[in-house]
Structure formats: C-alpha cells, structure tokens
Image (cartoon, rainbow, N blue to C red; front, top):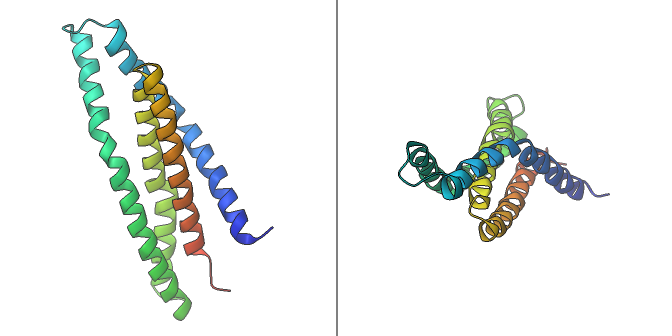
Length: 160
C-alpha cells in the first residue's frame, strides 16, 4: 500500500481513538444539559447551575474553529521548519519542527477533540433533533481533525 494512504488511514485510526477517549466529557455534558432541560425546575439553584454550565458550553463552541485555525497555522510553520531542517541538518529548526509536531499531535488536536465531544454531548441533551445534529457535527469535526492530523504527518515526513 502507498505510504500516503497508510498515513491517512493511521490518522483516521488515531483520531477515532482520541475521540473515543474523550467520551466521559460527552456523558457529563449530556447529563448536565438533560437535567437542566428536563428534570430540574427553572428557578431552582441546581437548574440555574445547569443553565450556567450550558451557557459555558455554548461559549466554547467558537473555540473549535479557532483551534483548527491555530492548527493550520502550526502546520504552515511545521512545513517551513521542515524545509529549513532539510537545507541545514542539525540546525535549531530541527527541534522547532519536533516541538511543533508533538504539540500538534498531543495538545492542539486533543483540545479540539475534547471541545467537539463536549459539544456533541450538550447537543444530545436536547433530544432527538439535538442528537442528530450532534452526530453530524461530531462526524464533520472528526473528518476535519483527521485530515489535519494527516497534514501534520505529511509535513513531518523527510524529503525522499
């Protein structure tokens, strides 16, 4: 199998494992939103706390987009650093490229996955329509993050 296809398949697998590892976040956000919408009285202290938490989930939604924008900027810098490493082996750019790659793979994409899974759980707390929207949203973000992860792996590949 071609090396490019193997990288893409590995990215899909890695991101599926990452998203699945964040499932507890989805369950907690689902429980908060479901309780706030269906079980707790609107004026009660617990109802107000659940509504406050729901608002914090709503406010975290734009962070997914900003996280992906930062990830794409980091991929650009990774490509530049990798090119400079290829021109001058043993330079300081080598540790910059390694640092960017590990930061992207371990932190940035993990944060985006956490936010996406939390938003999925919050959407599912609203019922069937929210669940359908949440599944489509989670699938869309999963595909985007998988492709971004593959771009990181492609950018980090040494020249042939």
